[in-house]
Structure formats: structure tokens, C-alpha cells
Image 1 (cartoon, rainbow, N blue to C red):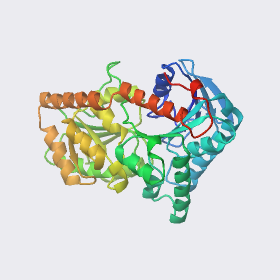
Image 2: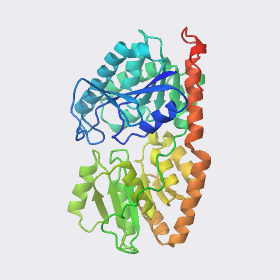
Image 3: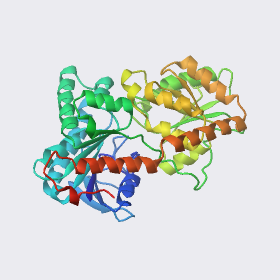
Image 4: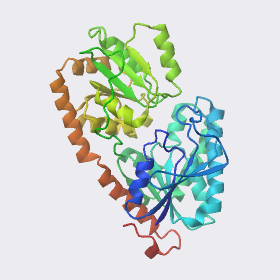
Length: 416
């Protein structure tokens, strides 16, 4: 099968389903190409070594064709900037698919944002490919929860989302709760499959030094990734400050960038005694080696009903790292982490409970924390393995490819 993987974010950006995902599809015998933007996420600034142009075709080290499409780089709190970012990539996707869509049997779309999926469905009117939408962040719910859109515009976005969810040939949802919400938006049940994400964590490799400012015996909390509104990390900083009253050597190391990093920097300047240590973002492999040096890994999502049916990819990643976890989350992700034996789960934004959880892990011996991490790693292998997820993904693609929605010959569309 000829598959186009359409995603606004791709390496060198910190995309979850990036080059590895495309390679896994290709390993099953399919011809896979990628269409994406020019790298600017999460900071909204074009990466060094890249320059904007209407179109650029490149080839990965594995020989995969990657089509980079023009977009307006932006990822800050500005509604206008975000709209230009998403809207420009939508137009580029639409033009690309109108021109080249006939080459593909299926277009597999990573969502968010919704706009590439909308472009794929509109261009499908002129071609005969199938559209599978992989929903990692549910729109319009998450966009409305962010407060970035006025209510009237949110209603229009809701109508577009319902159109996409109903028109897609197949939908992949990352949690049961998300699947239920997609069905509530009008998707047909037989077209929606729940597939848990897996971790991109890679064991071994060159060992990285522990973060600076870590003396021997120093308990370290580590967070690595996007610093956005959803993560609401100031609550974790305040929890770390409470825990540090009885653990004065404790430090909370944060690696990453995002629209809320400035708020953390302001807090650090105003509170020099805080245990917060801010670091620049690092590449994925380096971050994994830093995770290896952690005593405790931190996961937090702000208190909003939206996040009760989402599964942050950090949950799987942290379990795969084999480290104790403090997680301020709710819903399906909280229940799974609580079952892992490697996480203390608290309500979101409950700084006192998080402080107690941090202190509880920090006071254990290294051997006890190591045993907890092993429990988490075992739970990850049993619940979130990449191989089983890819088999489910291929079955979902096959179901979409052979569906009766449009007059296509199933014999030419089998997934092996």
C-alpha cells in the first residue's frame, strides 16, 4: 500500500509519532512518504539549518521521502499567531494533496492540529485515497479549554471537528475516554479504534552526566518536555518548594521550552531560594539519558475535565524509563499509573499532596526506588508495547482501506 503520513510536526521536532512510526509502517512492506511542515515546534522559531520555502523535498537516512510544506512559524499564546500557523499549513496540505494525492492509497493524519485532516478529507473529493485520523489531542474540547478562542469561533471549530470525525474512513483514539468523546461527536463506532500509545524511550547509548547543580546524594526531580498551559508546572514548583522544607537538598530540574517557560523564569527570578532549576531543551536521546539519572520523574496536567480522558505520552515514557513517578493527573491515565506500582498519583494542582508524594519517594532508599521503577517497566511492557500497538494500527488502516464507504477495490489495499 502507498501511504502518506501527514503530520504538522516531525523530526527534528519532538514529535511522538515521527520517523520511528513511519519506519514501522514501512517495515510491514508499504511505501511510506511523509508530508510535514518546517520545524518550529515547540518554540515557534524556525530551527537552525532550515529556511522557509514553498516546498522542499528531502530524504531521511533510511531513504524515506519527506515533503516539507510551507507554514507560518508560531507557537505562542497569540490566537492570531496560532491561527496563522495552523491555517497556513492547512493550505499547503490542501495544495499538496490536490497535486499529488492520486499517488497514495491512504493518508494517515496525525491530529492535532485538526487542519491537516480537514485538508486530506477535502482533497479526497478529487482522489480515491482513504483517510485515517490519529487523534492524540481531542478538538474542539482541548482548544476551548485553553481559552484561546472566543465562544462563537469555538462553535465553528466544533462543526469542523464533527465533519472530520464523521467523514474519516478510520479514526485512532489513544484512550477509551477519547473514543467515547469522538463517538459523541458523531463518528461511527466501527470506524473508531482505541490504541494506547507506546514510549519512544531508548535504553543504553552514551551515558549523559546528571544535571548540573546535583551534588552526591542530592534527590532530583526531573521533568522533560513541553512547558505549556496544559502542564501547569508552577503547581509542581510550589509542591517542590513545600517538599524542600524538609528536604533542603532537593532540586526540581525542568528541561524544555514552551509558552509557559517565561512564567517559570519569572518565578525563579522572584524566588531565588526555590528548588527549581531551568535547563534548555535537549534532543530526545540526551533527554533519555538524563531521565536515567533521575530519582523521581514528574508528570502533571492542569485540573480540567478535558484531561480526564487523555493519556499524556509522558505516562508511557516514564514507565519505560523504570523510575518512580509523581503524577498530578486524573481520569484514565491516573487509573493506569496507579495500577503500575511505580507512581504516586495525586489530584491535579494539589500542591500539598504532590509535596507529600515527592517526600515519600525521596525518603526511600535507592534500592527501593529501583524496585518501584522495575514494577513500572514490567507494567509498561504488558500494557503499552509498540509491537502490539502497531498490529492494531495496521488492522485499523486495513479496515479503513477495505470499508464500503467508497468504491475502491479491496484486493489492492491489503495491509500485511
